[in-house]
Length: 164
Image 1 (tube, rainbow, N blue to C red):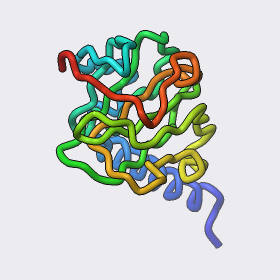
Image 2 (spheres, rainbow, N blue to C red):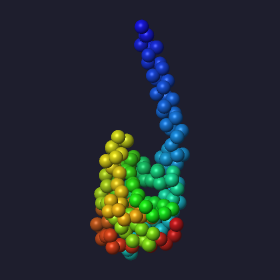
Image 3 (cartoon, rainbow, N blue to C red):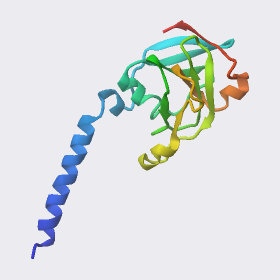
């Protein structure tokens, strides 16, 4: 009969190996708590925002994870290569967001207000949002929850990219 140590040591080694492999397989930018995003300026209707630009897969995966807050004059603009149905997740978020899906002409095609952060990795499926009405989007703009109501943003609103 195997002793307790003979059983636990291989299990411990396997757990360490799985953890290391998992960390190595994550995109580099996702692992860092402080990631430098390119900056830009956009207007949604007449409201100017300084935005962090997420235009690569690693930056899009990282998103606003771990950030403590986002003032009303700031946001994150996800820029995709082409239009499509876009899913956004709230893993490792510290606050709620309003999320706007925008087509290549700058038209807001869908809005999700007050999206709540995931409390654990297991909840990822319940805190993932898509442009549920089926309208394709080239851009997704994330802002602090309450922004959409505060500034009267609707699906008739228009995004203007000033600089990216």
